[in-house]
Amino acid sequence: MKAQSTTRPRVVAVLTCHNRRNVTLRSLRSLFSQASRGDAPALAAVVVDDGSTDGTGEAIRAEFPAARVVTADGTLFWARGMELAESHAIAERPEFVLWLNDDVVLDDSALERLLDTSASTPDTIVVGALVDPVTGALTYSGVRRSRWHPLRTSLVEPGDRPLEADTFNGNVVLVPRSVYERVGPIDGGFSHSQADFDYGFRARAAGARIVVAPGTHGTCSRARPPHFEDPKLSLRERWRLIQSPKGLPMGSHARYLRRHGGLLWPLFWAVPYVKLTLGALRSVSRRKKREVATESNRRGGSSP
Image (cartoon, rainbow, N blue to C red; front, side, top):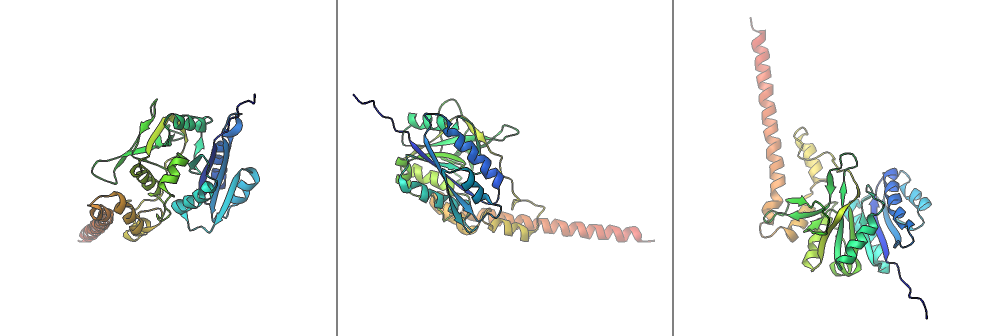
């Protein structure tokens, strides 16, 4: 009698990166270290190198033979980069696609625990929660949405069992074939962010579940780039930031809210731009009043 053979599931990670060579390599090392066990899944990666000039793509090719590097021109950002990586990854229909931000450092058993959760909740997107490497505070996870406001969400704190979520941060997400074939691709029509939330909502609409796996699965600092709400910046600089790919550009924001904002989506769409403009105008008015008061005090102080 022949021994029964077991087939290891194939997992293909998808990443996109730009000019942070050491950070990306560190993340890939944490990924491929998951394959050191004899019963580990068959693991590969597709990395979109979006116009890096620091040798990121070359270093990945040299160190990780199981990683395929797709070179882009630097204009893709996260959403289009992930869409491109996913299109290459699913061409051979792996059992799972693993979304992975290139600044994530996975715990040693992260993939094994994600797969265990998937086995207990079939046909479900499994999200891995992440913490700050210094403070230990939760930074990324699944999220729950406010009942009435499409832009207000709260992170799901992982527990000792899988917990339901409405959508997710796309930093560590395990998507089974039954789901990615049903939902369709990551939408590269977004400028940068919002594509992960959009995918989760589309998955839920298609009948898929989303759960946050028990425990945490690695570290990732919360990104804090210059923000368009910073009152210290000029109106011109704040408008430049809000319209940049990593801000809240009008077209991308409208794309998201048309799908997920309900009948009041135009109102929700307009609020951040009106708020920014009014806030900046108030700042200008206060500054002019201070200048007038300062000048008045200076003249009064110099009078005989």
